[in-house]
Length: 414
Image (cartoon, rainbow, N blue to C red; front, top):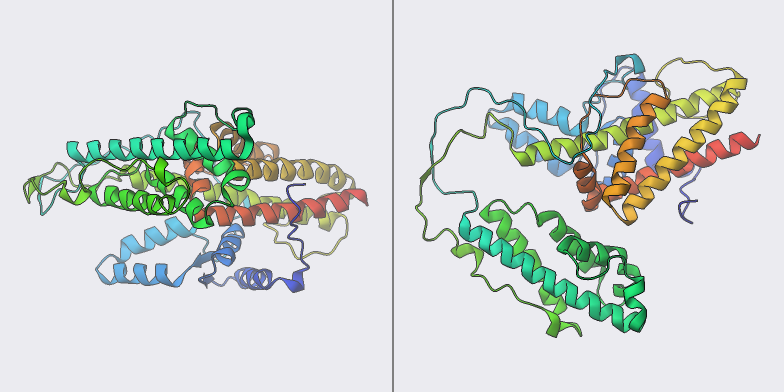
């Protein structure tokens, strides 16, 4: 199967399941439920079951925002980020036909409304030409350093065979270098660097194409310098290529303290906000598919007269004969989806992510249900698999799918 670690604990042995099922019971009683927890795994499991969940820091931040006369914005943002679970799981008939995943990785900006007049800002926030030069130098330095160490480490481990083993053959792009570090970490680097370096590389990869402001560029440079500090303590310190540009804090010193800007960003979503919405939509689509897989499994078990504690969405009925054929089909769906998520966790390539997006959309066709109105792209899926917290959530999804798969497999054998 997917791995040797099976999350198939009985109901009574899982504290997270007890909390989740208690929330579901309260939702069935038409109560509004919000789960407050700092446990990311518990919150992820709650989201998978369409339960609103939030941590303490997020709640405090939203309450502070609410206290600044932004009650309406607070409400919309909470519904947006938490999936707007309300008091119950929506029935299948309430799901509207939505937007399919586009083939390209671009995001269309929404039509803008009347724009406010230009205004004065205290400091310029966007990167200028000097910022672009520094960013280019950072990428060049990072590309050279990671390429040098990657090649040296591989030759040390595999001698002349390294060129046949490595995922991408040189010359590499910076994305290919980062992918090779991620892919071959366990085989090549795990005994050379602590796991913190791997996490730092993931953060750098995520930030690399998002350094659109001085603050973001400063953060990126700080992460790269932290990476180089660790490299300088290793046997490969001579392979580090330092950043040659001036410090980022000097970028805006020669510029005016005030500047004229165009339309206010308050009325029009920024690219970052649109990107974040796509990532949230992709996660919500995975949640909905998981909820409906659980529902169909519950229907099949009911038809076979087998007791269970799975959540149903409606009173759908099925004959025992149809239940067996449906179980076989659902088992294949769960297996395909689980295996695809594993491939994306191991290597988030465009091909793997496109396959996952296709499986998520085709699920609704196979289930003869309308696809939810949740637009996202392959790039959104990529960012979902790159964020450490989201990878933890996806590992949890994988475990839940594995548990459901074995339930289906045992049912088919009956």
